[in-house]
Amino acid sequence: MKTEEMKKQNRRTVMVIFGATGDLTHKKLMPALYNLLKRDLLPEDFHVIAVGRQEKTSESYRQEISQSIADNIYGELKPELFGALAEKTVYHRQDFSEDAGYTKLKEIIGEDADVMYYLAVAPQAFEVIIGKLGEHGMQAHDSGFRRVVIEKPFGADLKTAEYLNEKINAVFPEKDIYRIDHYLGKEMLQNIIILRFANAIFEPIWNKNYIDNIQITSSEDIGVGSRGGYYEHSGALRDMLQNHLLQLLSLTVMEPPRSLSEDDIRIEKLKVLRSLNDRLDSIETVRGQYGAGEINGKTIAAYRDQEKVDAESDVETFVATKMYLNTGRWQGVPIYIRTGKALKEKTTEVVIELKETPYSHYFPDQTLKPNLLVIKIQPEEGMVVRFCAKSPGALNQVVPVGMDFCQNCQTGVNSPEAYERLLHDVMRGDATLFTRWEEVEASWIFADRIKAEWDKQKPDFPNYAPGSWGPKAADELLRKDGRRWWVSQTGEI
Ligand code: BG6
Image (cartoon, rainbow, N blue to C red; front, side, top):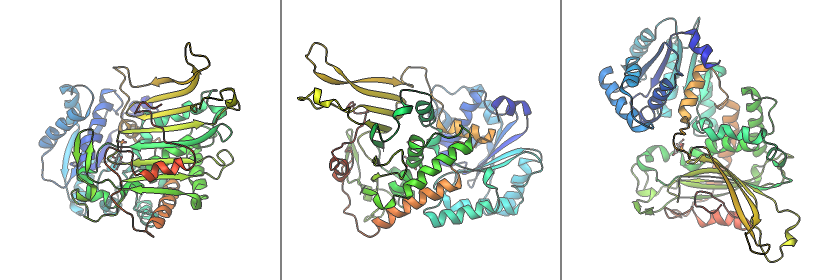
């Protein structure tokens, strides 16, 4: 549904946030709602019911969120705008398993309304909340929608994800389940489709005939911090690769969809994940865990010394993989992905390395640098095309030059945050940027296989220094193939 249509309907729309006092609500959801209001993208009759277990009044809750919105938006908080959001926000205290709380909640929601339930809670609470919504008939409606938005992690492996899915499906139909992968809300992920399919300079070369390899780097320059309790059950494989990075890969390599409709894109993304699973036996991996050290002058404790982390933890804070897709388009093209905490830079980018031309013999004394297409997801958003040119003056001296398109470099350009786009899509009923069950299932098959291989051998952790690019073995993974990792942030491209 278009925004104008949604607004014109002027229906009462209620967003119920379970986990209202948590980090996600404070840092992402509330700032996103504020920005949506600022951009006039919320329904006219919009309300937030913030559900939490702590004792608070609506007034004290509003004060807390005013601070977190101010801390997490670009620019100054405008008091009148915040006032308009605060006025529509009430705090409701309840335990997630307590029936009386749901009876009251149902009353506050009211009769004739569109409702989205947002589960910004620890995964252990998903089942009980969904179950209670079902028992209290809060998924049922005569008019208006009832949608449920679920944060990751969706299960901890295929088995637990299947179990959770069954529980949710028993209450909500698949079309009303919105599984969030916030990477899909990032501007440049959506831009990949445009770059690939709206440009005659890129579309014809997007295959094994021209592309030598594909690389994805998603690195963070901070450690696990206070999230050790969660991270001990996840690790880099399940925290980043199983979801965000496989989604990013799918968009990068999928076949042209029949149209840009939700269904057509999902079909193509799913084919990528399944064809990846057809080649599970060819996956090579490197895992790592950071020790103590420094990142950009700041001291950081070893992962094992982090709060709520086992002193002998074998959980990986870094993973690199090499894999192939079982499709004609990508036959023989290696795909390398790496992600980790406490690395040199915060960056996410896709690098497409092109093959050599058949004319390198024209330049017998020089090693030509390969052509690269870099899709910069964050913190800079844009694209770099690196190609060869003659060095001015020098006789046939070839140098790499870059054309750099930076979408968010100019001041004043402020791309909407991923959560703004995603919340707006849930309200409009557009699930294109959410993951469907089959994709979750295929991604877990992939991750489970890697985990099963790892479980056969104890790793030698810690094995990389903070502020580096991870374990040496991750560089070796490419070096043995005569390749190397590229990353534009460091100015090497
Ligand atoms: C989350 C992970 O899903 O994504 C975090 O749980 C990670 O561990 C975060 O830090 C990275 O998101 P972004 O948008 O900062 O790249």
